[in-house]
Image 1 (tube, rainbow, N blue to C red):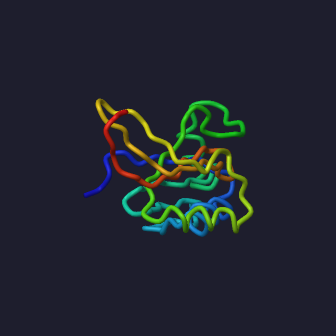
Image 2 (cartoon, rainbow, N blue to C red):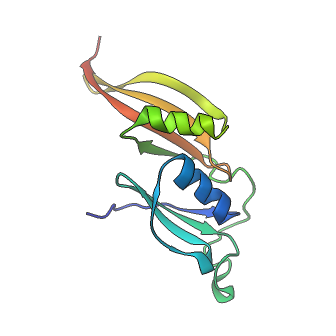
Length: 143
């Protein structure tokens, strides 16, 4: 089943963004259009599109822009991605020399009469989008 929400991120350089999303975070390219600076990615069901600004057909240039973009892009949003191998993702981010924006941490969030636990850390992608990577630790009764 396809996800019902797939964000498309405007990026400044598709090659640099692919290095981060594919090579560091572990996403796979489901399909791409290199001539348009576009890639559709997946990581265990988390899907995202990358679209290089000014990389597509001239007649469509700027059609998706609703205002001027200034770094960091994506202010006010973070993309939470559930991982199946948290330790490997954290090791790849560190090996790539990418600074953590926050974490790593173990955190328990209240949900009704229980708590939901995660290991998580935050990084910024090359254009400044905030990415929250986490792995489920399970649930427990509130204390």
